[in-house]
Picture 1: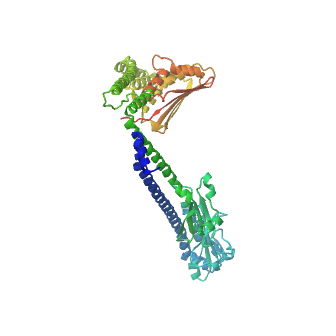
Picture 2 (picture 1 turned 90 degrees about the horizontal axis):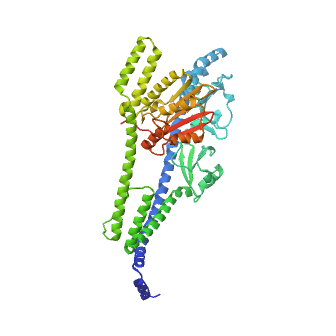
Picture 3 (picture 1 turned 90 degrees about the vertical axis):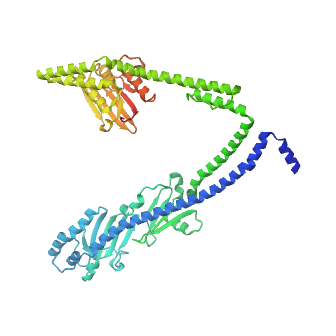
Length: 570
């Protein structure tokens, strides 16, 4: 197709097609270039960041291990240069004198080191000055195993030996002060294997890496990997590790660090593929951004040619949202044409519907509040308290302590129940209310049932609705304990803190009920403050999902559970 034909075809396109072509050439292509450059740069940044994290981890853990080993080295030096020990071991004394000196000087000194350093499990001095082994502290030099830690193979430095298979760790060094007195000695300090490498057990903020530590002879003395199960194929054994580390394109990143205290080589390795795997989400985001850019361009083009259709679709979308319960939604509109009038009519209807629903909701809450206040108003608090106070005084005067105690419980019950007309009180006051109520019930029932409280002190400071536990207890006594014919009744009240919520449970070992009966208790209308009333109040105050739950088994008992958010008194 010649140049003139391309121009003619472009000229004959509809406006929407022309805008699409312009958008692709002027918008999409530059976006693709920018996203490609961004992806490459992010890949480099993430690679450098991952490498820096690994280097920092190796450096910090190695330094931590060296610091810990330096503590053990200082202990070895302290013993090696201890003049008292050298004097005792080099002295020409009788066996009894040696035993006495060993028991009174050397044993306590070495034992104190293991006492104050729980990671040290053995401290032994091997010396040619003693032919008899003394416990675990002094032994003949000939008992020291041959090999890399034999006396003739040692110098004046401290040498560490680690065995990965047996998980043992110890250091050996010559007794310098003992040598000055013409005797030979080797100090053996055994340390817990895991304590030596404790810094490397610490949890990290990254995973999918391996760590291998080799001693100065190239033997692996510690191995760790954090690869997930699906990445376990990347784990290296010591032979494969040694081969790949020497290869230029091994597919792994190796970070080495040499221990200053021991000369060990600490190496962290991680597959290159896993290092750059974190770039894949960026690539997905880039592709998504590209698709969004294309979609946005198409929508912008369609908006110009389909302005009317767009407004109708917007109205339809908003109406569907209203159907799902998002009331009060309005559509911005400054047009006065037919569609504009339709949108304005919908906005008015939506606002009115939202106001009507709110009015009904608020009236329902006020109705419950008035209901509670009406119940509380049935009793004149001052008259009631004065009357109960007089009864208590009369009871004390007549030395009727039972009557006095019940009177005080009744006074406490009504004081917390009325709560000065407020619908909210602290959990500690609600607990005081039910304790007073149960004291009265126990007196009425001749203490024929038991009450168990399991209330966490931490929840007493939070707020709760007034009178939400007493109706549950009244129901447990009247419909569970009172009709129980075998065994002694028991009621258990539990209050626990559960994250951002409070959990209350009232359970009894009464006659129980069926699922149908339990559902009926929650749904039927009730005069006064029954379980259904508590259920409605909780749902109105905290939300529909915080309803009362009942678990019951006929012949076994009933458990009523409350769960609602924690709130602190203002």
